[in-house]
Image 1 (cartoon, helix red, strand yellow):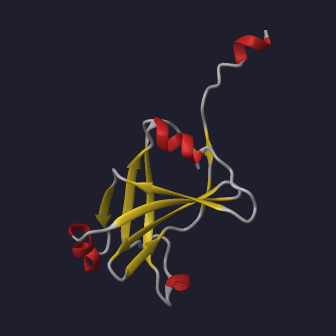
Image 2 (cartoon, one colour):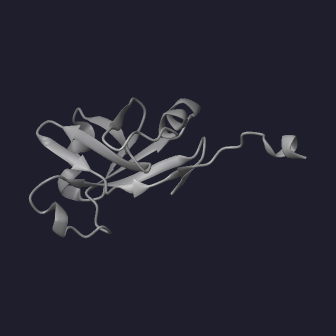
Image 3 (cartoon, helix red, strand yellow):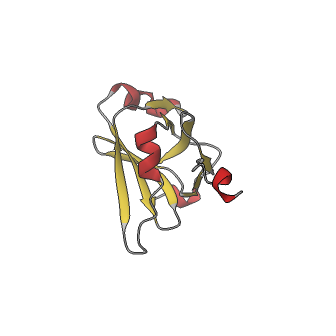
Length: 121
């Protein structure tokens, strides 16, 4: 997955329960969408050590119910985070009361222009 500034990052979310491993990845419960601003993208450009992870709390995001059973979650209080592991590998977590929703881990590659091309000539 390539990440670029001012583009939306959209991740499917699944209820974390005993059936999570048998779930169809095409039938998510919720969808998280966040615009990758400069600060968020800078945080995502990190690559943590093998035994570490980075948690990024999201303040501005949208949550959509893909499964009608979870429409009430949209109007309830919830918290969203992006988790960055060695790779870098990105995943999302949304907590609402007793329920936790997670996204499948995604390998990613932030893309940005460092302006080095002109200097090499």
